Image (tube, rainbow, N blue to C red; front, side, top):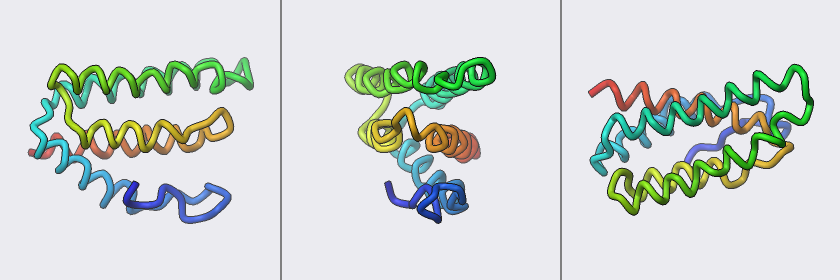
Length: 128
């Protein structure tokens, strides 16, 4: 991770550079690797699907994030599989792994910030 995700130790203040500098850097790296826009969208949609499931069940179940976490982590091996097929490159693997691996049942906030970061990357990627 280049830019810190949060500005404070309590993880309450999101670093605005995450959505500007970090997102732009990753979009440029993905573009340089030749990743197809549809591959980026495919993974972004999967992340959004997981986010939606957490939000949907969160109201009724305080353990919703813990229960969904294994499926969120499943995105990592899916990305490795995509790389083996030549659909994504090393920078995409680095991005997915560095942000999703450290997420635990207690760090749902980090997952939601990751979702926003991914949204910013998709926006930057679409600019060209």
